[in-house]
View (tube, rainbow, N blue to C red):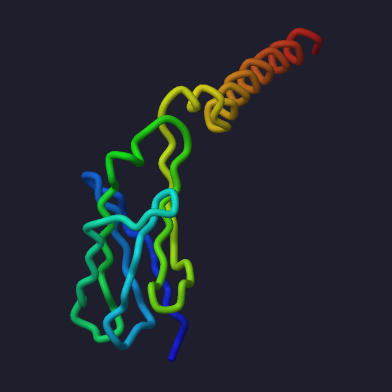
Length: 122
């Protein structure tokens, strides 16, 4: 039997969705936020015996300031199958993506100035 693998497919309308493969019997999945189990996790078979659809509703408590992580694991073995994070609030001001966007804008400005300098000195 192969190792169970949970692949994320989307986060839509407050529900994280994924496909679990490698389980021949009905899996017992638990999702936790701040070490507390979440309600409403569903696992349904998707035609194939070893393919399962997993849905994890995002709780309102996870929509708060800072970085929140939800871990999805196998209840029987305790192995973490996947996780996802939600980043919200004023912490986004210092997020690396905003820093990269700023660096890209400055790099574009420097490239234009360098090209102008090369044309003027030739």
